[in-house]
Length: 248
Picture 1 (cartoon, one colour):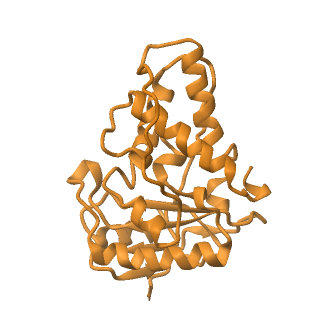
Picture 2 (tube, helix red, strand yellow; picture 1 turned 120 degrees about the vertical axis):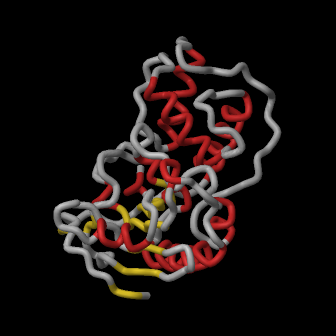
């Protein structure tokens, strides 16, 4: 671990750490990312950054609030920066040539993430991507990220998709009780979303975020039968786990 201190942090304000958030840098090199995350004028940072060769940098102490999450929410709470530890993975992202995360990078992330969740008592469903917290603004770490592998190593949750009865697809412009149920289930799972029965831009963004994390084979903002079945399956697991009260 290489220390590369960033000045961009402040006090957590008494909030307990309950989220581990994974990002990609969306920049063309580790050097560019480190420079931005350490620039006082940029007002952004993270706790850790991991280069594609597996080299890890510590920018902000875990006890401090790094400025990595921005506006967003998870499980009905909006102070995500105060409640989270943020790890940035060097990757050009969707804007600059999104690509798979190398094995060396994932190996370092796996060891670090496992250590953090064990030390901090972070619940499995609170290991999330930036797009889970801010679906209308962010797409990282994206559909190429190996959530299943990270969960198998002890950080996060994953289960193979199970067969469910097919359901009619819901898509932008739809409205009614079926849309309302979809929105209610996504909100119950943790996504910030108004339950109004209208499949508008906000719902489409949340569906895409859910797909990127949990059903990455197709990210199209359409809640087809497979997407709805996956959500129902995961909600069953989520509701069956003992969830710390502070996260509800």
